[in-house]
Image (spheres, rainbow, N blue to C red):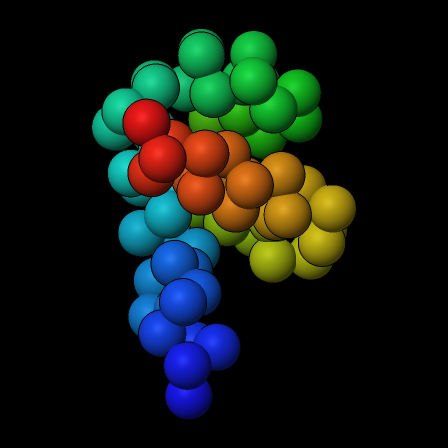
Length: 72
């Protein structure tokens, strides 16, 4: 129970994480920070979610950036 309480991602959907990052950084800056095609070539929440759900390393990078942005 305490492990989940300390997990800042607990209860957050990938869609809400991505939406917050796009709102804070914009697609262009997000694509510079995390170099994946779905952020740089005709980006959308929908297409990015499809890619991130299939690609664990990319999702990990998005979650890492989100956690870093919370600390600021």
